[in-house]
Amino acid sequence: MTTVTLRRTQLATPASDEKMMAKAAASDADEVFLDLEDSVAPNEKADARDPLIDAARDHDWDGKILSYRINGIDTKWWYDDLIEVVSAAGESIDDVIIPKVKSPSDVHTVENLLEQVEVNAGLEVGSVGLEPQIEDGLGMNNVDEIAHASDRLDSIIFGPGDYSAAMGTPGLDIGQFPEYPGHYWHYALSRCNHAAKSAGLPCIDGPYADIGDPEGFRASCENASMIGCDGKWAIHPAQIEIANEVFAPDTETAERAQRIVDAYAEAMDEGKGAVSVDGQMVDEATNKMAQEIVEKAKAAGIL
Image (cartoon, rainbow, N blue to C red; front, side, top):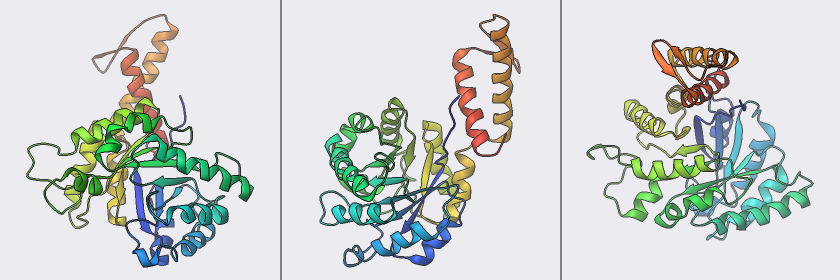
């Protein structure tokens, strides 16, 4: 079994806010991304690179994935976002989040520049990963190809805010459609997750804007988890604990999964093709599901 890298919580943190970046470093989020895009005003974007660089180099990010989000490649900022930050702090950066990815060529554009930046900065080529964000209809149409666009990819992220605007959906609250008879984002998230898993990647759900509604956030996490997503954005530290809990197996499930893995391994040693655990038949498919749960539980410290 391979080692699982948890991405239960992806904490969004404005790169222009030094105090918030310091708090993010001390948080329990699996991944923190320092944002140069939507959370930074246009007249502050260039100036936000320096505090981002300082935060990446000066804070302790051990035990966390540290990423940052550049501006879209259709803007005037993305080029220097990539060159300046990776040149100065590339040794501390795990991933670059690319917003509003519409096609594999968008990934290739960033990847080609990133390789040159790594070479010029003396970094190992390929050391910085990429996380494309799907935020419109064209990106969704091309998400399968995007998921296979590069060996650098570390996740596929769904962005419900811009996706809502692109689709012409009603309402102004990101990630929230309580009046809809069902899970509003089921199709979009499922499609992103199918593409991600076909490439062996985790799929991350986007934000839930109402930070004063923990139960609504929990429900949103649970919906994404049941589809197969691996984590969700947090836009406030108060959301971290909920996401970390929902996107990890509970103790009872983890212990049952361990019993299944152990019993199935014993059955294989004895030449049996299936075995009964807790009164239910277990075969190879069940064993694979149980193995994944065990790995996640171990990574989360549950087993």
